[in-house]
Image (cartoon, rainbow, N blue to C red; front, side, top):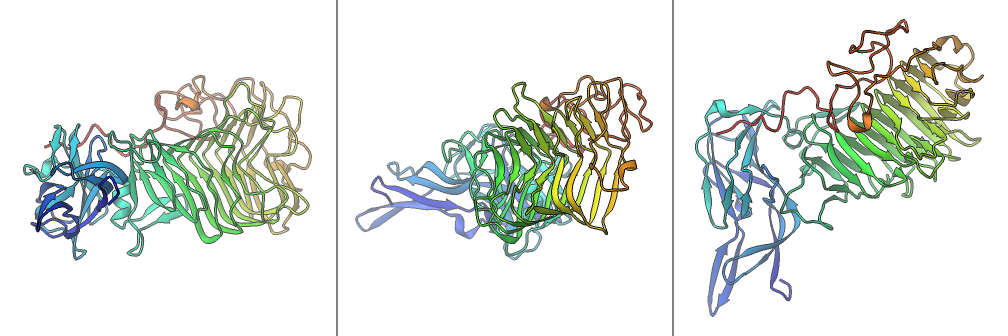
Length: 546
């Protein structure tokens, strides 16, 4: 208790229950002594829900306007009517599980929550024991005061609709796969945290903040979630709904700390950052496992995705897949996806698949774009490298090459990429600029197109290892090879009847307007929105109602 009589306590977001009861550790009460008598007042509210469905592993309550329901909060006596004064660690979901770890039996259950005004009603998500989910929505507004019970009406079985929530799926212990990384909660792991905007949430200067290692899922209506994580060993930040890129503002660069099993994974996000580098090397970092970006839009990348140039490193994986990276280098000449400068070390696997890289600022100072900048007399070795079906527009390099390394080993696969206006018309550039190739390396370097103002320029000598020059299919086009409505910064990628990057087919001729290229470049589902929806047949307005 503070000098102002402010109490700090909590209602847990994960509650263990049995049918017909509420969780044991949630009955927060406040009392004031009057002589020898304590007059206790209930702080919490209850939502009673009748479960009539078998095979349910968890039930999650969430307000349709992301109201705060649990977590750590501040409380005042308020003349005998206890009142929440502020939120310290707010939670916008409450999940019920069987106290013995079994499926929830049919019957009545009670969600213990903070007093809340559900301005748009609330929803209950059933996590089934096969990993699927069902959702039902009460859309009517509801003001639930403290010490009150709201008894929901019985829910007809046909009112439930199929649902997709990665937050629920992970917390229920089912695997989620992003690229080559599979996440699965174990009994020892903490539950993932759900983040979204809400009219009642005011944390760290008015925003919902991620500031420590952990597993976080961001709601699809998020606007004010920020990431401020430093000294990372395990950060998973992913959109909850795989159909939507949830908005996150990155306010501090991720700084990996040495961990052989370390992971930085960002997935299904619309990321904005005013930083020079998204990942930097200021912490003690010599060994790390995974840096993965899956289905993210990265707005206004100022300089480098990963600047790990202060110590020798041993990195297992750097992966970008299905991402849209908007390059906005207004003051620096160089933009590298990863740079190690003069440091020794090894990057064992670099994988870039189905990404878009576009220079978007008219005032950009960008002169040198590189997939990897690791070339020096003491520089970094690159192991297996796969660069397939990427589209680069204006991601320019002058002469030093798109991939630079002291040495390469393993397999080098560079296939089906578009390089559009990526070097000056009169300049020949290198694709690979590597000092030493391992004699046992294998290569597949084909179907790459370099387009500059209607004519394709040959690559400079030494762009590929000896004997691999014929693998390049250098083509000359008299037409601009992207769709006329190409505008990835605004989520528009081409034609309205399917996939984009039309105009080309495998023989280099023009394909019928509105059809998909079967060979080159990244592919996206057409969308006029600022982010793309996957085909998972789920929209937020299509909730089951009762």
